[in-house]
Length: 183
Image (cartoon, rainbow, N blue to C red):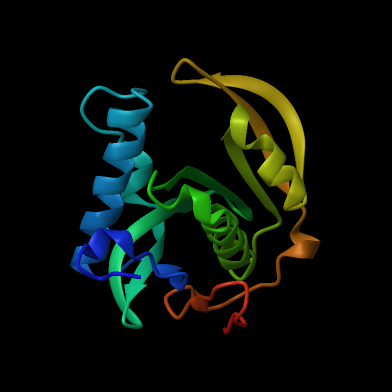
């Protein structure tokens, strides 16, 4: 393998945690713009809305030499009503979608975080192409809806499969399939 092109190497290890540092928050915003404005063309300029004022952004962070490098995935969560939480704006960089597990790890962090905050129900409006992933992750389909002109499925997580975590900022490192994930 040649390292003359730094973009040719893709680390199989990622950090999954709540975004807090300025560069992480900037990366979350930029990734959402890339996915929802440029790629999917759901929004014209940006996808920011009032939920961003109360939501907790979560991130999948690529690593280089075991150090945090770039935001390559994100989702946001918020408490919609007492004990009812919602996830939205799940996005994975097109360069990292073939990794196949970043979306699942972000979903797991989202639901486990809400569960650790006394969540009784966790809901999401899921784009139709992502419904099979959510079903594999123990989510139930509730009803078909349209969001911003795009077909979605309202879905609910089975909280039995998502243990409560108290500190999403600690997160975890997800490793290549040949290595073990650590909390």
